[in-house]
Length: 235
Picture 1 (tube, rainbow, N blue to C red):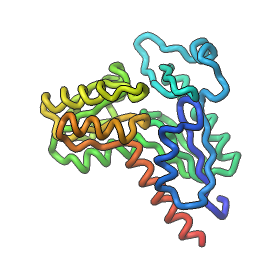
Picture 2: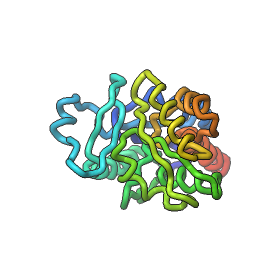
Picture 3: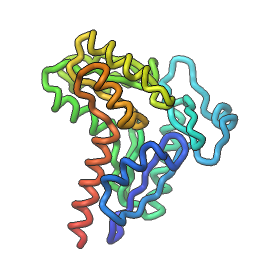
Picture 4: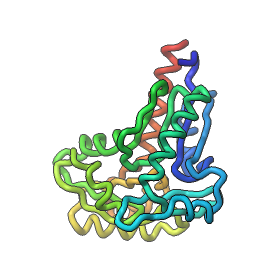
């Protein structure tokens, strides 16, 4: 491995992600070199629609493009691209690779780099924090309530789920989803998408009166800790 830490990030959409990278930069040790890559970099909306359209009845992902708009794509085809991008970042000398998506991806690995997969971190952490309490999960797409449900098998109770996209200027849908989950009996809420940011967390917390866990904040802090330890060990 290189003598210093180098972080590569992969978004399902297009890089850079002005909604997520500032959160990472706020926590990362100063001077850590970063390479930001997206699976849809360089493609137009028309290209994306032709190559990676939603497939009826199959899992999907929603992500952000460079112009700030969102797009829904077929998850299975994204996995193939994700594997290629991990290899590409390793070839560029990234010894840590962070996936900027909380979706569950099977059979994803890195031969040389330390691969950080949010879905393997967020759900176990939430289960440990919640204990026997009822968890409510807000996902971007209604279809993900079923396709991503297996991620939460460590919870004491099956999660209550609601959908609200983070890729609009309006936080009202997130607030309403939080209210609905609270009325159904949720004790704590999770915003299950890296696209949810602090304004979404604040809106959900204010509307519901419940604790709200922000996925990208957990991942940013833990990634920063990992790179801090790595830097100290190499100094």
